Length: 269
Image 1 (cartoon, rainbow, N blue to C red):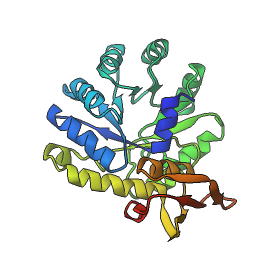
Image 2 (image 1 turned 30 degrees about the vertical axis):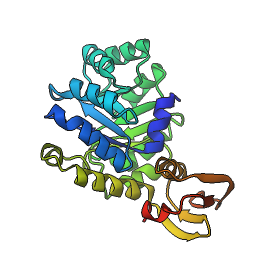
Image 3 (image 1 turned 60 degrees about the horizontal axis):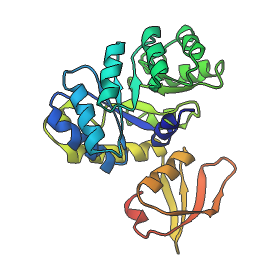
């Protein structure tokens, strides 16, 4: 898999954002990073998208910034010239997909049925967007269709929220979930970035299903529904883990591991 997509998988959440005021772009990206989500998809639905991507790429380099709602090759070129590291489209446009592949641009096109998926496979893609996820059948549909395509992963977007993200992300064929509940237009436009950070933190913990069972003498025992993402989250939070000490249960949902930082209990609740 493309390394960038592997990074997205470890993050697990792709905030889908519409920017109306370019001055809000950088504070927004910083708020997401502070909330544990170093990723954002800026949709090409406003004239501010290109400049927003450019500013985030330049000023918040730790953020994986992508361009969403990309409908044309021209938009794909503008987005990547501005600094977008990946492109997302709502549907499968063979012209746009071929263009991005030729230029080495990671693209996640929208696919809502087997015909779309088989086009994606013909282009050698390993990840597709499932859109609109809830309206198109939700997690049950993804599980049913994934059986026929064992090497494909999905990025469901549309109707994903705090109540259902844990269920989606626990399925191993889901690379990441796109959503906007933590980045509502009202919060962005009023500059309520503290709330965005708080909602992002909540979203991450809901996604991970992370619960600390015990912290004692530099040793942590936790339970989670997605162990690899939980470990990545702890590492992004500045926790140094001793992998030689790690043990986990057969289901891979309970981890006991030594750590160094004593402020861990302020990061996971």
